[in-house]
Image (cartoon, rainbow, N blue to C red):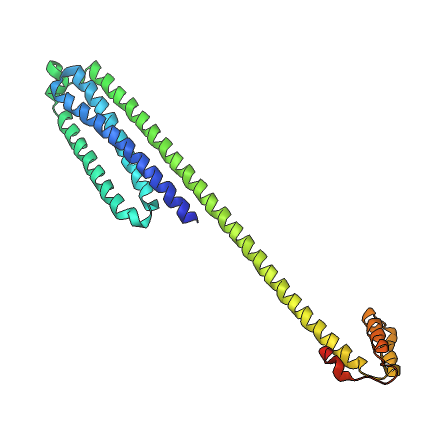
Length: 245
């Protein structure tokens, strides 16, 4: 049961990440197409936006990789192929962005210099803040995945506990039935013994009834039955009561 729950949830989350990744890829591709036409500050701004989009795409790839083991077996081959294609596309976009970013002359325009300027320092600070923001988003997604995994584990553990309780109940019921069968067998043997005992003259019957002062309801009923059947007169036939033997 735990495996079925994991498979259904894994497929749904994988498809959700895949749909989100395709949107991010389209946005990233559009930004990369615009970069060659820009220079200076606009180009740097476009590259920063593309870097954020690429980082988001990589995060989604990582989430899809985490969900792959939960995919049902019949769909694994198809899912793996889709994942490889998506990963290849993201890698290609990353290489294209790296190539565009390496053109420092186009990136910095006429202000290109080997010595860092105040603008360069500001850019580095912005990149650092952007990297911190991406790291926080990645950490949040990892925490969410961990929470879902723990919830799934709790569901599986509770299900196993319920099954163990049901098994114990079934075993107790079976044990009680076996004990009841044993009581029934002993009761039948007792009735047969009593039937044999009452196939005696009345005086012997009464003596057995009062043996050790034990007089039971069954004794009284069988005594009345013997008397009504002409047992005391000696006119009896134990064969007529074969059902008790």
